[in-house]
Length: 327
Image 1: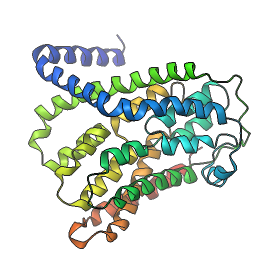
Image 2: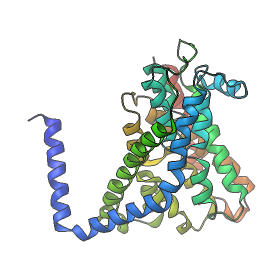
Image 3: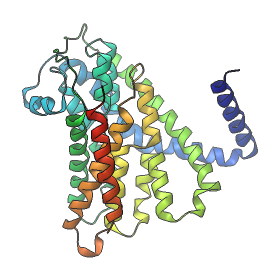
């Protein structure tokens, strides 16, 4: 047996044993994950899945003049500017789904798709304002979070090495029907919910065996890194509003392990080479901007974190150098 298959078999057997010995905890995790999908993810994401497929299909190959300046800065292929709108408004992983659609239709090549995946897959306003809207005393703070999130994504696009080819995206071969969009959206939604339920089960066991012995701030950080929604919903446990602001900015930019797996599932056939480094750079820029904008908060609400600033700046410089010298 190959080493990789052996590890998969060992992990699967261990997981099955855990489910048999403590099925109650697994059931609780699955129910919680399904509840999250039904109450939050499906209502907020499914309409965007359908509309983004229709939008991408309708606008592909047609240059959008009002988005061309940003497209030029970020290296979006001419005729694919609609991806910018989808990446801003759609939410995870709608952007990745749209990139995959263009790649499957042969309108962008593999290198272009790999590059776009690093910055055209972001949290949407439906999630940001719906989940985080009540967690800050000033409603403008949520608008600030959205601005930081989008600006840092576009910054990554500007830094990434540009493709040598600047070919215009070819017109679509056939018109996408609403029935096709609905079928594809259902498939994507099932993948998203499947990963959310699996990760939630793992997270419940992790909380039972390990996380509950850690400080609340570390529990929230690990939860957000693992699954975006769960981490954001626990932010009110942090008393300092500045610390909530920094954590929210980081969670939104990274998206969490669950979003990464969702992205890999919908972006079938596209290399993830730049995805994780791109998300890390986006996180660094988001944290640095969040630290700067904290000065607009009342002094009592600010979070003093010079170590985080230094680490984020150092990591950003390293990642920018990595992209500059990447072939």
